[in-house]
Amino acid sequence: FSTRVVVGKPSTPTPVFSNSIKNIVVNPYWNVPSSIIAKEIAPHMLANPDYLDSQHMELVSGARVVNAAAVDWSSVGPSNFPFSIRQLPGAGNALGNVKFLFPNEHNVYLHDTPSKSLFANSVRAYSHGCVRVQNPMDFADALLKNETNLNAKVLESMYGPSERWVNLKTHVPVHITYFT
Image 1 (cartoon, one colour):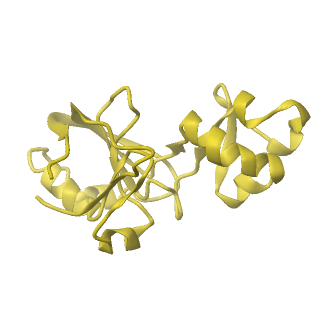
Image 2: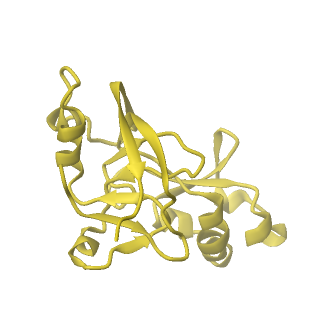
Image 3: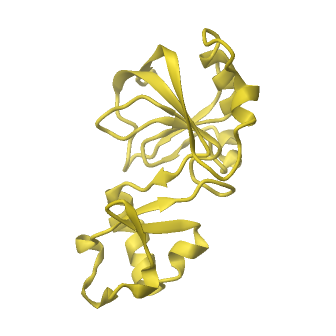
């Protein structure tokens, strides 16, 4: 199987490593990495507490969702931001409809994207390190070839508002590297 991808930009390159895909997540939450929160989201939030709502995101403390309007923001800055942020599943989610997980210390994975126009570019280094897949459901069909009763159509039937995890019986090796 072959398809175009979008990889990390020069300031946030996709790391070179190997692992195995163990799970597929349909309708994924995007748990925003702390580096993106500090550099990109917190400044917007501190200027406009409604920013999270406009991006379909939630403020999270521990395991509970926090009302951003109830927070005293006067003592909070981008460098001491005490919350995590996640983007809700659905239209506009940065991960699209599906992500392919291979646990790693970089928090990098393969995923869908709503930014389909980037695949037309000859240079496709726009991500924060993850690998965006142009045809994720075609990739899913190739990936799931050895799984019984599981294919892209089954995954598509899971589309909706709730995150759904699929554990693979056959773990598929992934080697991320660059060839020029």
